[in-house]
Length: 109
Image 1: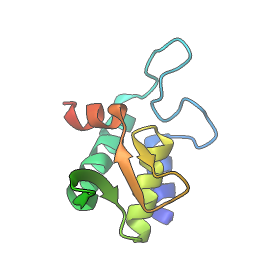
Image 2: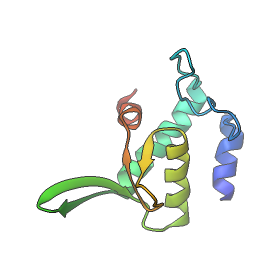
Image 3: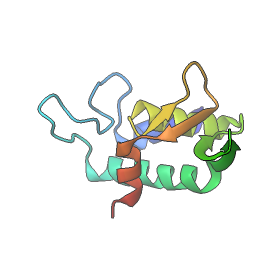
Image 4: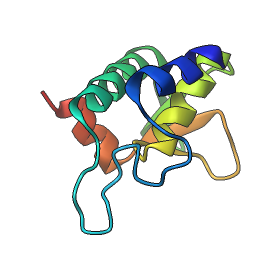
């Protein structure tokens, strides 16, 4: 948990603020600064590289994120979910998927 607190500290992110994670403000404007975007994008790329998983479910290929019940994975996905980039499975904490904003973050320069 300490590294997540460090990430909040160095990035200037605030758990208390509703718009501090780069969510669009009420007027639709993105409130994330470049430092926050760089940190979250780097974290997103690591999650994509190490926690992405493809499985067959009822004969169809399903892409998901699996934190494998590792603390670092759980905290990384929770931080990205809190920022609106990952949607965690309903009622769970292990599996999730990228939101449209998350896919956009991964594709950004």
